[in-house]
Image (cartoon, rainbow, N blue to C red; front, side, top):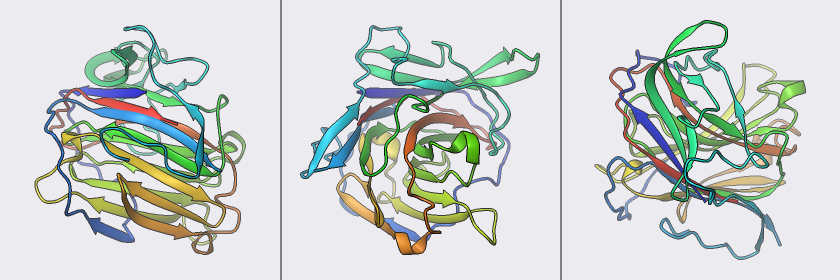
Length: 294
């Protein structure tokens, strides 16, 4: 299963909304990505329950595959509607995003075994008459698939460009009734375009004293290397007492249940994919490819 994200000539204002301050920062020193400019790929999104290599993910020992999507539909077709639905709108989504999310083939389609999510600079008039300069897509499994505990992974090749904000993440199934942040959020991959070599892995949830409770870790490729240069496997292993975050074979963070409000991460989660356009200057994003296996 592969997902490709595209973004062309996206311009943004400077924006202060980013990931929460990291509790951990891990620098990778051994990696050898193959250059593939313009290709954003998310490959091999997997959900495995208890019971990779960047270029060819392998099923970890002790897990059994319970859900996946290989995006093997016909070229030009839309993602499998039995597995994916869409968030549609242009309200800013709490992050000052500039795009209007659509369910058009121009923004989400199957292409040569890949799911393409395209963030586009184009004039777009929303159904309510509002005008937008950008479009993109935000796909989710809400109402179709959710799960608690196990290994969730995706093989991803990110886009390049300041202003892009691709993400592979999970929200609680009670999002509709409890809202955010009470539903809880697990961010497996978040990359801010101006940080080409950094991945953010985070937990967000309710707090009795602040707007949210946040635990965040980052992992950084060696100097000069970008996540857009090659495929990488982004994964979590979620157990009742801990969540472990991985980039390829590198375990870069472990958050224990004791660090989190009681029950905040216990509910089932659905998967979300997005290619957002934030407010940063001169974002020019090339084609991208992404694949998830689950």
